[in-house]
Length: 310
Image (cartoon, rainbow, N blue to C red; front, side, top):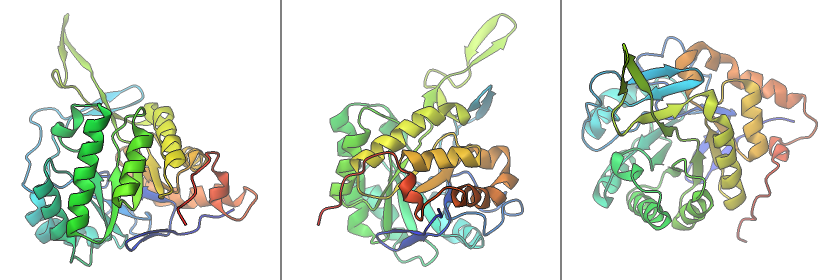
């Protein structure tokens, strides 16, 4: 059994099974000497907004026994500086670049997409539906669907590149959101968002909330079972390619996501914990697949996928 390239409508082709999750290889400057240019099937940028964001003040990360808790405030240079200063650095990796985007209104979604439409260095866009605080506050299904529709329609009006929709970690609405994204013109579904979580800091006998009342986001091996279910739910609801991650730390973890229904694997926290591990992960995943009987890795999928129309 072998991995075969995944072609996503709009022009993106992923030729290796593992890509980086949004933001986990940074802006192209910090990890360039640690991660081989050929190690990844694609690179997903940190999330970019229209205007520059400084991000959270004070401590931004807290290690836990089975994962990483963080609250970064989505720092980024804004779209203009991203195009002028950051994108050329990322292009040096040689892997397809997927730009993660976040906005809170139709005008900003359209402006972000329009700015990237003519860039030859950008292979695809990822609409991060959990990127901004405005998107995190409601788990009401109609509200989430309205937000998704706004993002997809606004981006589609301004850009013809492959459009990936990254879902919030909300299992109750995963299937409905997948169907809505496909109906509105998305080209792929991304699952595996970090979860909202909290942590305490103790000073003597006095506790305090490490990231305040809003808490932070939680990623790492502890969320794998939750992320695996979301990938399974997405695969069962949509005919679109599924890019799935969340808690993947070993090659076998990646294979588990293929069995749940993923077409491509996205690795996040591992990039931060051990960047050098990414250099061999694709080859290790491919080696495991080679030992499994059959011709196509998609035969591993245990989720009944819907048929494409026509």
